[in-house]
Amino acid sequence: MISALWPPLVIGWLLTLGVEALLRPAPCVVWRRPWATQGVHLASWLLLFALFMLVLQRPWFALVFIVSLQLVVVQTSNTKSATLNEPFICQDFAYFLDAILHPRLYVPFFGIGLAIAASSAGTLAIAAFLWFEPSLVTQHGAGAFLAAGAGLVAASLLLLLPALRQLPACSLAPHDDLKRLGLAAALWAYGRLALRPLDVSGLAAPFIAPEDTTPFTAPDDAPPFTAPFETPPFTAPDDAPMGATIDPARLPHVVVVQSESFFDPRGWLPATPPGLLDAWDRLTQEAVSQGPLAVPAWGANTVRTEASFLTGLPADAFGIHRFNPYPQLARRPLPTLASRLKALGYRTVCVHPYPASFYGRDRVMPKMGFDEFLDIRAFPGGGHDGQSARDGQCSRDGQYISDAALAEKVGTLLDHSDNRPLFVFAITMENHGPLHLERPVPKDAPRLAASSPAVGNEDLRVYLRHLRNADRMLERLERQLTPATPDARHGMLCWYGDHVPIMDDLYRKIGAPSGDTCHAIWSSRRPSPTPPGDEPLEVAALGQCLLDQLLIDAKPAPSDKRDPTGSPVAIRSKND
Image (tube, rainbow, N blue to C red; front, side, top):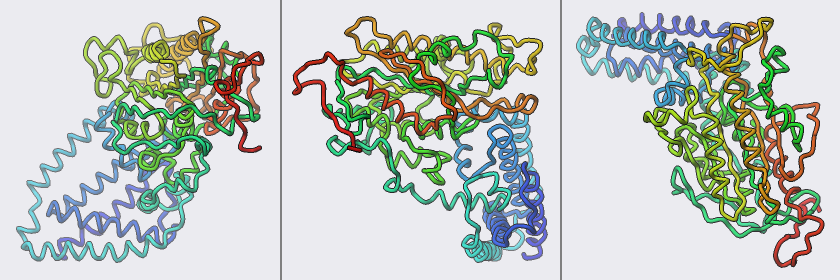
């Protein structure tokens, strides 16, 4: 039995080191790493080999299976590094299931042909090994086979446990940790940290409810798509700016749009077609806050930006959970902008034209203070993963539900709102990649000047077309939030981009943008030109900025002489 195991054990270990060297950027060579990282790599190989051998009963088949899986991880890491500026980390294993449930968002980045070829080759290899390699149970008996497998498991654990205790601390900078620790040790280190729950008691949540309001707590059995929690009576917050008073009747409708891959490319690509962002330019000229926005995501990972905006916490406040805070926030809710507005008397609605289960939003949004969560099924013909009945095509532009359809849905909510102010958090999908799937390029896509360094890049033309559609959505919402009569409720619009788009081929050719997106907060009550700041605003501060502007808007007019037992309501500042 031992003679049958030693060759695949040694050869497989060497192969795993060789496959790891294919990572780009590459980790430092093995002999320059701490001994604990080498021990973790060897122990991980022994453990995986033992487990797969016990299942497959064929050592060479186990070797090929494990090395193939490692190749998948390495290729995934290289693709992720090229497109998202971040290597594969332990938390990304969860996305393999998402790749099955939502293949459109993942598989095209690897190449559909490559995915089909790899799947076919894997199927043939499994059949070949099962047919040609004899089972160790048949050759040596079940007792000897199980004893050998148990011995390998025990040896791997004896090496793994002390090596894990001696692993150097992670910096939570994935590229640096991968280079310093190697693939296996980095995956173990991040995985162990991820087992620690988020300590919400140690977080200085800026949207915590004042002591005299009903604290927000979502019930554990809240329905996944609609959570009609009872709104507490209106109580003014005691941390409003300047210790002012607010008038509930003057609380504006608030629409926040997290626009997919929205940024202003004109500073990065001067030869951009004219008229691309006309509505954006007009809005920023009247915005109470506008300028560049620093976001913790590049190309994808929208939830990192989303969680920071809603909670008011920077990404690093979540520790290891910064890479996807939602699984923790679904179990350990924090006060959010939505729950704070809910305490002010707002009806809170989140609208996202994609399946609600993606990123677990169906579980986390009710816990974050939203009364309702409308997903793709709220749109005509909406179906799982954007697949819809034939009549659903009217809601789509390109691969996903259009920004125009989303603007119409938000407009319907505004038109049919009750006497309460309404807060809508809209998460767009139209400009989500992969952009190269939209071929041929639509005829109405903007054309680049012959002098542009990006001329001929069709991904950019597709992106700019959807960016123009986002601009039209912004214009429509601005009109919708402008009151038709003096007595109608005013509106506020907050618009920001979640990250820059994925166009890695173009970035390699002409250089990448800074990674900052942009934001604007506009009020129909007091258009006031505000120049952009010298430094980008952190997305974690954007929600608080919006709340401050809202409370200023809600201050009673100077001529308001109503009875103090009704509105307006006097409030004080926590800083008084």
